[in-house]
Image (tube, rainbow, N blue to C red):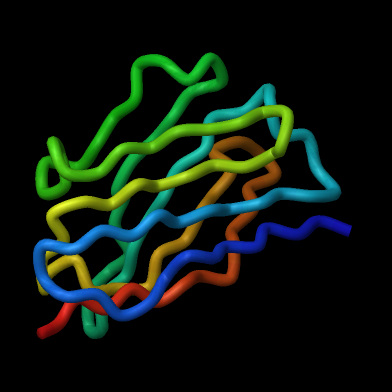
Length: 115
């Protein structure tokens, strides 16, 4: 049974930090590219960051460059998103995704940035 379980979301003040985790089970992890997406209310889901199999050549949306860091631990089948200097516009549900067929999505974790 395939499971992607995200955690680490919550309520944080502007300027704060959160670290999201996505633990995979029931599927192959190390050979695939993984991504984090987010979806704010009333908006389309958007790509936040991508990490390839070797963990190098990461890519980020312009809106999060310099603030977010994506990483992976193949042994733990986990992909992370370190989010720093959070802004209210970062408020969204964050999802992890395996970027190969068959595509798998996590259930999402809510991040709310508010004072």
